[in-house]
Image 1 (cartoon, rainbow, N blue to C red):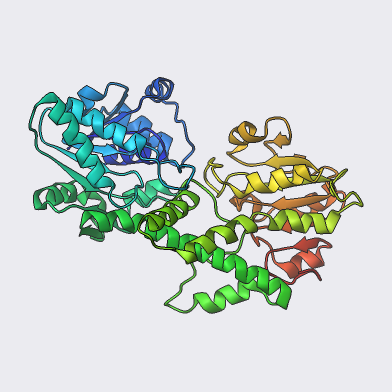
Image 2: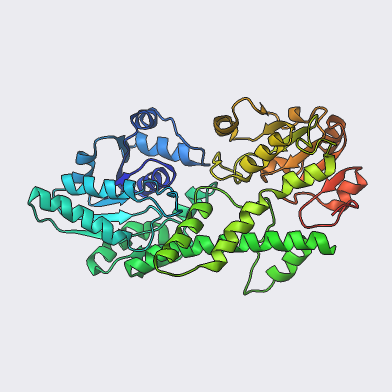
Length: 448
């Protein structure tokens, strides 16, 4: 099948590579000339395991190409995916200007039947707006061409996006047209060889499904973070609590790890957008407002622990003269994405408290420089930043941090203090090793 995908960002690029991998002819379109030129030369603008190899292979075999010329891409394709950004506006609502801009572009150049697919995360009712935008452009051209609009939300996890696309938990297709549904099923059939997890529903329900899924996961995270905070005050162990409630088949274990708050390109934006969507329907989504508030407060927890632990008499700058080593900058492992990452808030608070901050991350140092510039120190070696530091704080749970050389850490730090925002280590082992170990929601090493 011939496909064009508007937007060579995270979702668009992964979708383009995976559709090409299954034998389709795919052209990815983007207005960013530098990005397209780089992709043509094999330069991948994002870090995602396995993506570069897949892009290069399908380019070499002629199934995947990149362009800034939309007309040829649209006219040569049956299915046109819209995978551009929907950044939050000042009121939290999803900004649809890029989505609707692409819709108008398609309407200006299409020359026959097209299936226009909303792959971007968009609020309920967007398909109607896309349809209207295309129709307006056809009216200006004074032509009548058949087209259909489909909602096909993405459910990719950064760091595992290739596997998620190639072996999806489910594929949601929102359409009221039987013929279009069959074409979309044909497109996704290669990814359903082991299990048929294709769900066809009406368009508005498909649009709501994406927001509902991310809002549910964000809610679980905020809930567990509050349980962890309460465990600290009550002398309980949140990891034992997690095991106890996760064993309930109605609950399960996923997204019940306490931490410094959620971040990334989806959860914060989608929670805000769903709250705003509710407001536009005169509904006060109290639960999600609380989820959002809890998450913002959670980003302060690690910095607060360090202040309590290392505070100087200076009330305005309580960490003056202190050096903090940070492991992890990206919002989650296996990505360089720092959008809404907890590290941004944590490091900013440490700097404002007067601390000197050093940081390591396997992939996100380049992104971190965009935010912090030279106000913090960076290293590509996780141990180099520890020399004579007052404490190590773990922000992101990269595999590299799970079983480190504890003797080397202890020897390098000024005092053997670890504030663990991801509960990577066993409190009893850390206490036996002579560490002052401060986890999340656990009592260990004599400190909760």
